[in-house]
Image 1 (cartoon, rainbow, N blue to C red):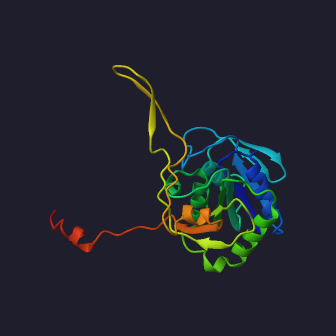
Image 2 (image 1 turned 30 degrees about the vertical axis):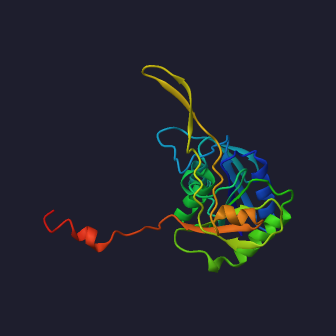
Image 3 (image 1 turned 180 degrees about the horizontal axis):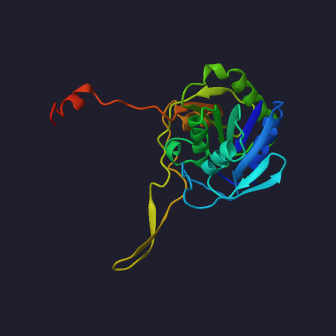
Amino acid sequence: MRILACNDDGVDAPGLRLLARAAGELDAEVWTVAPEAKWTAASHRISFDRDLVLTRRAEREYACSGTPVDAVVAAMTVLGVRPDLALAGINDKRNVGEDVAYSGTLAICREAAIWGVPAIALSADARPAEPAPVARLLEVLWRRRDDWIADGAFLAVNLPATLPAPIVQATIARDKIAGAADVVEQHDDRIVYRLRRGRPGQAAPGDENARLAQGAIVVVRHAWNAHLPLPDATVAAWGIGG
């Protein structure tokens, strides 16, 4: 079994180290390819029209000068690593709600899914102290992979403060980051502002935040290729000749 481990917090982040150790307990060949620096809220950015650099740090470990998604693409193309499973994280904060769009961690899994590779993102407000419970979770999810692998699909897992814990499914929360800004300076034709960090902390029954508050391991299955077709009546309203 070959596993690719990546993150958006940087190649030296403790969460990535712990994740790689947990992956290693699955008797797998683990490749770590991750950004040199932190790329919080990088989303699915890919770097074109500039040179990127891969720096070998250790056996099967590389730092990438680009974004989290650049690191995944580099693993697949430059290094020729075609893993059986891609892992992202362990992110240093939860990834819920609108983070589906913003998160570099989830973008890693989305990119892997585009390549046809099963992927799991792990995030936690409080990083686990030891790799063993994470390894156990990964082993269960991998053993049951036929239950969740589908075209375009990947898993977003948020870990509670204490492990082990029960696994539950949840609906996607609505708890938007970057929902407010503070003006730093204001002049006649120039405004300097800064987006506020953090999120409102909203929760609804059965959503990701509510389930995390109950102390559970929260799993949501996403699919990058999911879509909502328009009603036929809307399409028909255009008419034959427009």
